[in-house]
Image 1: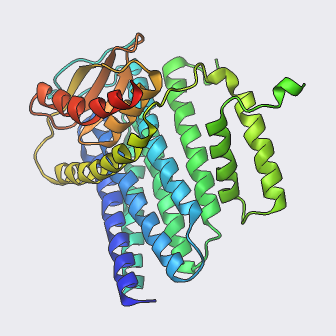
Image 2: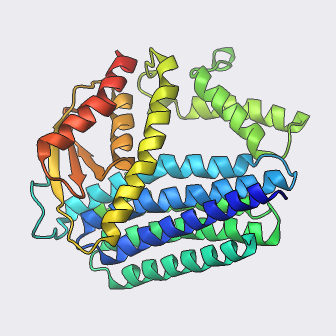
Amino acid sequence: MSTFAEYAISAMLIIGGVFTLIGAIGLARLPDFYTRLHGPTKATTVGVGAIVISSVIYFSTLGRGIGIEEILITAFLFMTAPISANFLAKAAMHLEVRTSEKTRGQTWDQ
Amino acid sequence: MMLTALYITIAMVTLAALLNVYRLIKGPDAPDRILALDTLYINAIALIILLGITLKTRMYLESALLIAVMGFVGTVAMAKYLKRGSVIE
Amino acid sequence: MLDRLRFPHPWLSLTLFVMWQFLSDGISGGSIVLGLILAWIIPLMTQGFWPDPPTLLKAWKTPAYLLRVLWDIVVASVDVARLILSPREPRPMFICYTLELKDPLAISILASTISLTPGTVSADVSDDNTLLLIHALDAEDEQEVIDTIRNRYEKPLLEMFQ
């Protein structure tokens, strides 16, 4: 394996790990449900995407072809993350989950 | 060098999973717990991919794909249950 | 019987067929036959859930839009990451966004885009498809967020679906 590929894989791995961890920190420390929704939908999805890219580079340098499965996983995660966020937000609005005092604007429930 | 990066990443993702478990236990509401479970399965996918790189096999990717599909269906079903009181109307 | 042997959604069928070839290990006779069967039977069974065939009129504009969204996702994640790590409290806000789009598919694409990009999650669409409730993680000003979404995402979608 070339040194360049090794550097690229390592960088992608670390970036992915950092984003995943930040998403989880956001989930643990932000004040209310709606703000916590932001961490997983963005940071974690991008983190897994970066890890998947490193896996694609790794297996293609090993000469095992380009990983279609990895790309399918990423595409699927990027498509479903906003949908599950939307469903959870709807459920939270229905249950009238507590929002932090600093929130401006109103929710609605129909 | 790549191996070091791999181990650091595995440590970070595991820590992330632990933080999710903290949110899963603490709650305080049901949507919070579902959100924690949702993030947890995405982290599990990341861990499976990392395991595949460590063991130099692509065998585990199929299971990662399955977890992605099943996890999404589970999240949607639970969120829908909270909103409507039933999964299938 | 013969009138069932058709493909009501050719693009969906094509996507399913190609996806099946990717999922099965290598293209073989078996995977092609099974792929054809799936491409025929899945659109037929899900027909009731596809009210109108979506009208994507200017399909050649999709790659530019996708690239912009992908780039924005990366930028948005860095923004959110910085906000999560900084000690100050975020300033969350609920925003009502008046939609100009009419097509349901276009609205769902816009809602998904909003969820994946800078500091906003789309929470709900009103029943008559005219209002979108958005939760912004860290917003100074309501109008600024609305203008960004309007110019950056809704205008290209309006051009694509009109």
